[in-house]
Image (tube, rainbow, N blue to C red):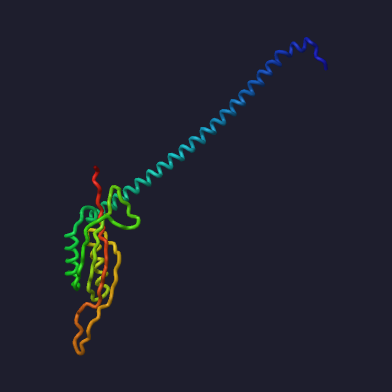
Length: 205
């Protein structure tokens, strides 16, 4: 079918309208696609931000828990007297009291001056400082339990954390006397070295 010139003139306006509608539809499609991509990018950014904030909140909660736990431990140490200045007289009195209460044999000891703790992992220069007084001990024992009881008492009563560096036990030679009743005499000799550790809190300058 052939279209006459008159017919083409009549179709010109509808064709122009169709073209305009097609262009408008294409523009709406691309605008919607761009909006969709921007929405997806924004959603991904918000999701990443939310995850980051949740991570920070989790870390803050964990740090708060650790601070409370450390504070509780610090307060427990302070209550035991481990935090503060050196208490040499208290330690001497404690050793004497244990010896008398346990009815131990002779105890010789040397308590060295306090100094910074020399131990792997000990950190220096922080807000707190770990210091140690070295206790060298020679004891005469009836049996090994005397030494274990002494260490246990010293740990519970002493105003310090007791760290055993070394401890050796040897048997004492005793002359045998025929017909004599066995006397209550020491049978063992113990030589031990302990670190009596306390904590100093550095005062701000």
